[in-house]
Image (cartoon, rainbow, N blue to C red; front, top):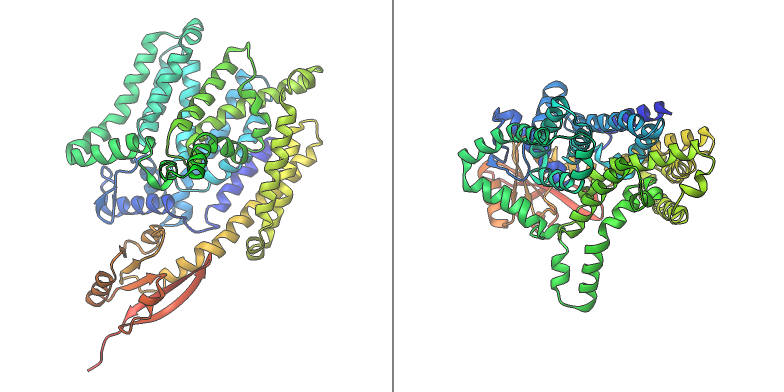
Length: 518
């Protein structure tokens, strides 16, 4: 069965360049990493030459190193996520088999590897897969610490997580420790080792935080600490917040906003966690085993904290996925060993089966979206692979060939879906943006969502403008081209249209200035 895990990793590596960079986050992170490589300034992330404090620098550092080895390509900027995916799988296999019973790690790793959210995040140049690996390593270290070695390892992993997405990882681990302190200390944990791990984490992270604060002062504090952490949790990120919906005041918008606020991550766990969603009862089963309670508490802590947040993004609860995978893997391993397990272990099996059927139907319907599989015919394999893999992993007694068929079809279909999406939504805009000479600037005027990925593809020769007169002035002064969805702007007499393209129902125009001849 382990060869299927390696197949998942190989498929991820193949897919890294199967589709172009997406927007917004991937475009921002790739562009910031490219600028860091160009400037040689590893302290201050920048975008368009201005400081960019949305995220700490660890992912940018990894992407910059990867670009030095593999060039300025999608493969290079996404490679760190794929490697962290592989490392998380290895961690689940090793620790699950060691602590939860032989086979628990293998089954848990396969469930984790095939979850749609894992398959997505392993192929994107964003922070979430790296964060999940580092927090899982910290989670394990806290359980295993009986001396200085695990204390140091856990502290370094926690410090690197703070350098990946900010200080909330420290808060999560602090709450987890307080919730499980009695159990952990009864097993032999000493407070001095916890304190040493905390000091190690701070020594790992603070040099960057301190250096950037000394250099940029309140600009860094207000943008990163206040806006990107405190206000985002409180719903300040209006693009992803439920508050605007609730604040409209109409009954249905309020009810809808409250429903999204409370149930958003239930849906994410259901669709993003298939086939693990079939084992969701592992989260609320009464457990005598201390380790399983520890994993349950971690999963609920992550799920509960981000359910309370007014800003919602699917990947926020991803750090709970390795813990849920381990719990599910332990259930499967126990069921295969104990004859009475189908009655005693499969608590919630009807709910799990319903979740699998409905979730597989949703993913199958997505694969059968005609423009997608017409753009890449093998995307239709997703309609076979998603339910087959889900049911084969929910019924561990099923013949091994069903797992193989499901996994292979799922991975082929996933590649097809990504390739099809690229042809439909990404490639037309990307190819249009690359038509101007590399020494000319491309100005994006009234292009939603702004396509920051084009900054990466244009090697910095990219600007945005929200004012028509400003865009025209820049074009005539510098010979810049413009990319716009505004047909009236493209048809202005002082401009001519170089090329047009259609993407996801939008018409894009590439224009250049007309210069009068003497």
